[in-house]
Length: 360
Image (cartoon, rainbow, N blue to C red):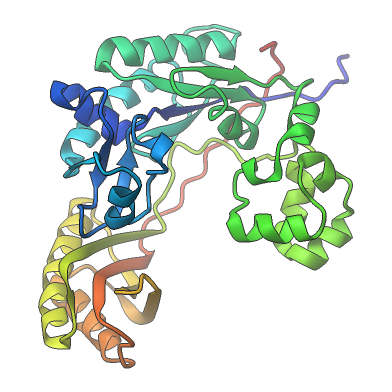
């Protein structure tokens, strides 16, 4: 009897600069030029940057002002989420031709478990290549892929040969791959944690692997236990096709900073209406309302309250958000307001994934 452990075959597909690439595809005048989706020259935040803009330091989540400073020739484009969703659904249908175990993370990336697959192909590497070719032929866009024995390694691997490439890390290669990986490239290790690890002499996966579970837990709490396992290639999270959202949110960045709470109330009413539409569309209600406030200095604050009953009505959402608005004094003028609803009434569904041993 084969004593070797069974391994799953997981593919992480990540579209290349998805929003910006869609805009360049639909508008030939943008091709080959630095493009930022979202934000504006004086307001907002960049949602995506084209590959032509990235060498200048333009990336998602930075302000439009900073992006323009980095790249004076940057072209700002308003996002068209209906168009992005349309193409995302086309890509999703391609995935489902190969497996029903598809876990979307966003419009532009997903995990696929192809341990058992609909095309009977034992090679996850070849399946990933075929999927990427189909995405290019059917949508005109490129995608990158990571292939490995678990979701953690597959996600890291998908970033290695971007754009329009893929990387496979087999079961035998996982150990060396993670040991040689710079610590800042570990998925889930952000800037603050990276700096803390540097101070502890942890610069690579090898350094991380040399630390005991007690050491890591004492410095990083529960996350330290996770770090101990993932650097050893132990990550048993299944691909969950019925991934349930934990919250539904709507927010808006204003053209001019708001200083009056009366104006903020007006904006919250509109945000509540938009959130209600989203909730009704998916037949969702929730109990916990959270108000998000971003000030003119880019600092952020959240205020939450949990109700004794489920709500999805615009009026109730607005009333809860208004109560939170007046819960405490505002420390500065406001550039963004958002409302999210969590503690939802959605049922959690569990999917059982079958594990088998195959060659990659």
